[in-house]
Length: 344
Ligand code: NAP
Image 1 (tube, rainbow, N blue to C red):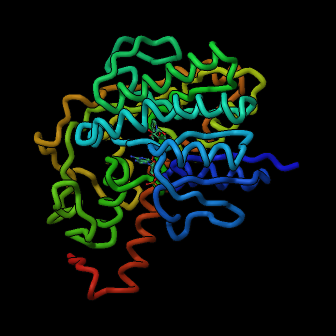
Image 2 (cartoon, helix red, strand yellow; image 1 turned 60 degrees about the vertical axis):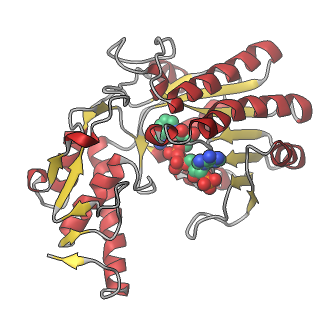
């Protein structure tokens, strides 16, 4: 009989790759979202469950009715900066939802396997050059504090009740599906827009300005370094972790780090442009509670699963830019007058 899986936050970046992967492996997929699936999201053979995960009644029905063999808990307030605006909601989703899922599994399906999307933000800044499963955690935002609670509580239920519950400590991972609110996608979009000859983009940033405004992309600290991976690779890792006979926690990262400046260089270079002509630093955009440096030590993941990332950093950046070029070209072809785009 086909296995079944429940994916929360299924319309997000990782949800899209994971749902697609599970369908390829012939799972019956139950996908949760607060809203109807986006056009273009893989929908064939997927059962969508639209509802609010903070509603105890909705969550209990979801688990009791679907009786999944595996749950991938991806739903989250996923931007640390946003978590300062909605700290209570962040705690409810990022911290208490994993605990509520564990409680409901004990009640309705104790044999179900759970993957919890934890985050490298739990480490905070710099106690070690690389972060692994044992690195000291000093979280700096409501997002990171709540993720640390979710991470630890999943481990506690595993030890106390023998639940097959695992946390993946995910380092940054990107793809063409990354929302535009993240810096990686802003850079990819700005490079694509510049390549298409735009000076002002139709898409706006959080301050209501075009992301590329008068030919310039404004960014904060270009020296921030991150371990950037490809979201499709990480969806495969999530799946592998749940297939392993022993439940455990794993750091999920490439082991390399790159600066925001390197991201800019590669993005603009991939469309034949020089990033210094387009990127400016705005000190107001520098965030004091963002981690300055992350780099995974994925030794455990490598030794247990012999895992290596398939997509290298330059290819990842270039694929994001190319996807944005295609979208912009399609948009410009379909509504050249009404799009509000200003061509240089
Ligand atoms: P994403 O694209 O932002 O997707 C997260 C999904 O969670 C959203 O699509 C949204 O779905 C749902 N969500 C957001 N706010 C919610 C709320 N208040 N209540 C319920 N659901 C909410 O994030 P992602 O990149 O796919 O990341 C997946 C998971 O990995 C998240 O838990 C994230 O924190 C974690 N993670 C990601 C990264 C990364 O670099 N991508 C790094 C570390 C950890 P609906 O709006 O459809 O409900």
